[in-house]
Picture 1 (spheres, rainbow, N blue to C red):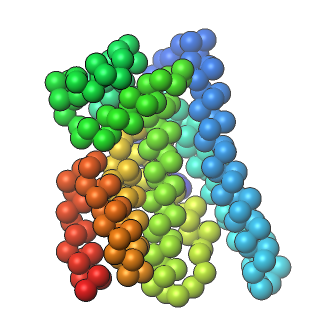
Picture 2 (tube, helix red, strand yellow):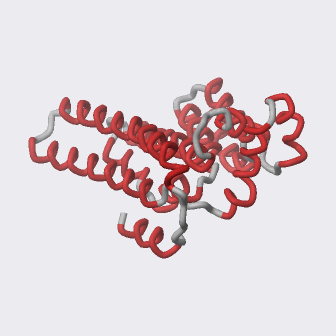
Picture 3 (cartoon, rainbow, N blue to C red):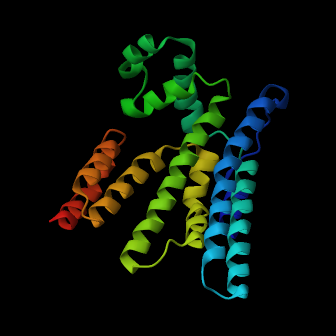
Length: 238
């Protein structure tokens, strides 16, 4: 958390935004972010209270979980209007194009105006129909897939160690410096293909080949980097 805070302070330039134009979008964004965070906290609290552990351990676990969730939300607040170069040079322009044109025209223009996989552009087309600031919408998509990534990582750990799902570890994953900065500040899409590839890995670990290849295929349509996990997938499914 301290490392993430330092990186944010040192690397994110101060930018001036017109709050009068963006205040509505910001409020909507914060509400949308709070929904999964609070849901995680509530579910984690219920599950933790059902565990047969001491009151002290239970109190510590819940304190850590809710503290991490508060810190995650604080990071999102700090970097709510930070714009990466990728966003300013590419993502914002593409989303504006999709917002100003019909779905049919947008589909024809994908190859001409973008250098990202069509699947990601389909997401941009969908969110461009939502009356919110492009930056907040793109960050929210990355945030949701980051949650999936952290969730599946914990599922894999629980499967390998043959233990229960660890909610403290779950929120800790969301606080990892690179992951938290990616969804909160940079608005990058790497969490999308990575979360799908990790989900494929989990199902391969469970020997569920159909679901494994389904999510591997979904990862493939976003980025070719999914190939790094393919050899391990085949080993697990043999």
